[in-house]
View 1 (cartoon, each protein chain N blue to C red):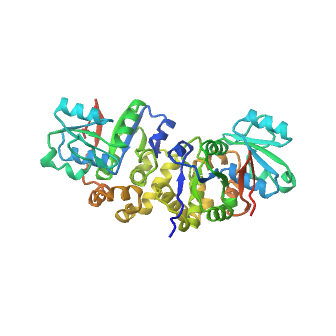
View 2: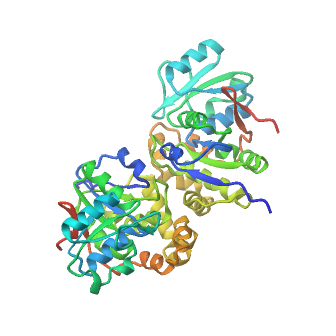
View 3: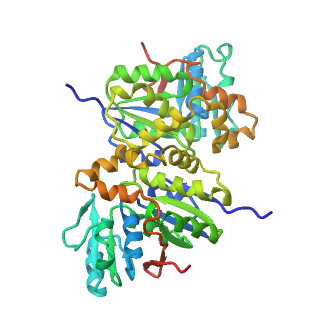
Length: 242
Length: 242
């Protein structure tokens, strides 16, 4: 019997360097809202998404590529960028065939950390593309890190719940010796049937709901409404081939 | 109406510097086994416990004070020290009236971090002294950090469950805007009636049970069997006055 690959959950970017991520698929998770927006834009036909870690770089790449610049800091659209970090902005009629240059508080930071530390593949995960992520990980049959982007390095519940949803679905394919994963699965099992009400208890809800984004946040915990697999390839997130 | 003090849970020493801990009581939590052993030794009459962060310093202070040197690295007694990190070693007939000089993998490290970062008070918490910790925190009426020692900076379940037990009992006395605390309380509520079986799923259980310490670990999740309040004062942990 071949041994199964390992799956670990990392609860904050601060903890990523505790893990060897070579030969590993790293799933970047930023449920509210970067990775939900990435899945949605690609599902609606965006040609590619360039994740960048600074606002000046976002503006620069927007000029070079002719792409749409978008991003947020602390949950708000950044001055100098054209669009924000709401999946609702990226309808098919708006985004199809276009390039999106995106910078966010937490998700793009973790993505670049994973690349710098030598992950063999980087994909992004969110409830809108839950099934695509699960299918990809099972098929890849490699070690997995479920990387929660957190909020300014502090643990958050929504990313953890997504990690738990993945684990609940695919755990029999992996070796899991990881308290973070056990906790994440427990939390998802506990709340999978009351997600819309439970997320109203999270700190992020209180932060974003102040800007009137309740519908956005409910969308971001709805499974499989934008079921594509964003894969990082040569500087861009693109839809992975089946 | 006066506002209630804040309570936050820190899931790893790596995350401690994300919080302002001045004017704050920091509870050091290292359920398997440092803070369970500290509560037990003081309950059984130890005069004081000197927590130190290195083995050479432990040996040096043992010589200076005439105290018993004790500690572990990676769950095992360290060569050169007299005793280990099992609460079962510190019976009244052995420890009463004596000084214990203790060094451990995770707990003593976090304790020194909290002191360096300017915590106004440092106490230690574990299931054996759960009620004493809760009573102290309510009476102090100050901001609280529940500091999980974790395992080599990785999240662990047993420290989180203890944080959750504290939160479940005293939450109405505090302002809690903290996803870590919400998760910890959820996890404790989910498992409070199956602790002996649930802890068998943790990574730490597998690590320590290999050394035949199952009885130790069950003791370490039993509430109020050594109900004193260890308070750090001038280099030593001593029993706080009522």
